[in-house]
Length: 346
Image 1: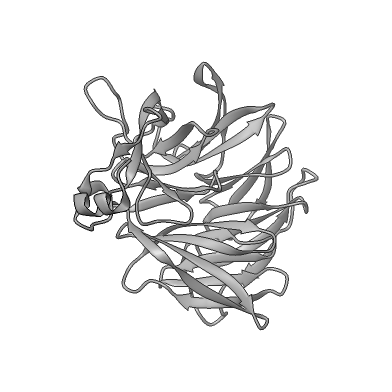
Image 2: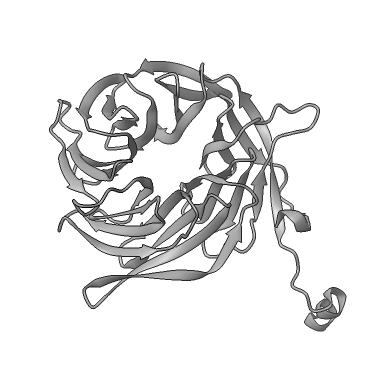
C-alpha cells in the first residue's frame, strides 16, 4: 500500500480528484403526461414506493411499480399542480391557481382556495395541518383532516408596506418557515409568533432558484440554497440569545448548470436536478464535489431532453427524476465501483 509520502509525490501535492458513481438510465416513461411535468413526489404505501407527478395539463398521476412503473390513475384539477406534499394517509396538492386539494383513499377533494400561486406545501405533523406558501408572499395554515372545505389562516411573510415575490421556500421546523425572496434575502418566519425572526441577504444581482432544509430535534437546521448561476450553498440556523443567526458553511459548489430542484429525500445526501438534464448527488456535509451523477445518453438510451424539475430517491439504489420534456426517468447504479470524475465535471 503506498504511503502518504508516495501519494504526495505522485500527485505533486495536489488533492486527489473525487470519485463519482455513475447512475445509468433504467426506465424512461415519455410522454408521461400530455404536457411538461411540474412536480414529482415519492410516497410509500404497503412497503412500496409510489410516484405522483403533476403536469401543465392540470392533472396529477399515480404510478405503481410492477417490474416497471406504470400509470395507475389520473386526476383532473382546476389549476396547474406545483407541489405535492404527504400528510397522514393523505396527499396535499397545491396549484398555481391557488387551489389546494387533498387526496384520500383515491378520492380527490378541494380543501381550500388561496389568493396567488400556491407553489409550496409541507405537512405539519402531528397537527393534521398543512402550510401553503404563495409566490405573492403569504403563508396559509390549513387543516386537511377532516375532509371538508376549510378557511385558511393567513400569515403575511413581509411588511404590509412592502411587496415581495417568493422564489423558493422550505419548512425548517414545525413552527419555522424559511424562504428566499427574489431580492436575494433569506428569511425565517415564526408561524407561532407570526413574525420574521431572521432576514439576511445571501444573493446579490442573482435570482435564487431552489432550496431545501433538514430538521432534527436538538440539532441546528441546515438550509441548502441555489442561485440561477448554478451555485449550491449550505447554511446553518442557530438560536443565540433568543434570536436566530445564519451561518454559512465552509463548502460550496458550482453545479455546472442552473439548479431547478433540491431534494433531501435521503437525509444523507443532497440531490439536485439541473437545467442540463442531469442530476447530481452531494454528501450533505461536503458540497465541494459531487459523488454521483445521473445521466442518460448513448445510441441505445432515451435520456431526458430538457431540464430536471424534480428528483427523488427510490430506496437506496434508485433515483427518479421528472423532466420538462414530459418524461419520467428512473436511474440505478451503473456499478458499485467508483468512477473517476473528469476535471471539467467536478
